[in-house]
Image (cartoon, rainbow, N blue to C red; front, side, top):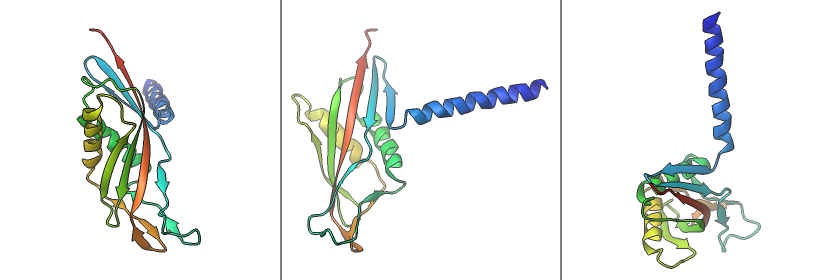
Length: 163
């Protein structure tokens, strides 16, 4: 009887933890020795329809292998690896703009808005995006692969502690 009680206690704890994780979907956290770093990768991403694809055409947007949620996890993994939490104190919204070509490769990476003294941060953020090795399935207009543009909104919150 004790075993049954302990097993049920264990599973009830596990399931409530799962619910908390589901509530925090889209928020990613990372800690340094003196800082706490959160990135909210907003969904849905902005996919721009190609100009030469008419309204009567069958347009399919570019897709990341594994879906948008998998891309968000991969992006945060590389952001937490390449954006130095000890150096940058980043707060606010930034946008990642990039193109996906007809083969599925990323190009023309740009980070906006441009703010004073942010050159190294934006370079590190662009590097994090380039480090994602999986390719995209390109956008298609009437079944023909076409170049497309994507914009992703990132909200950064950094908290510093004095230790």
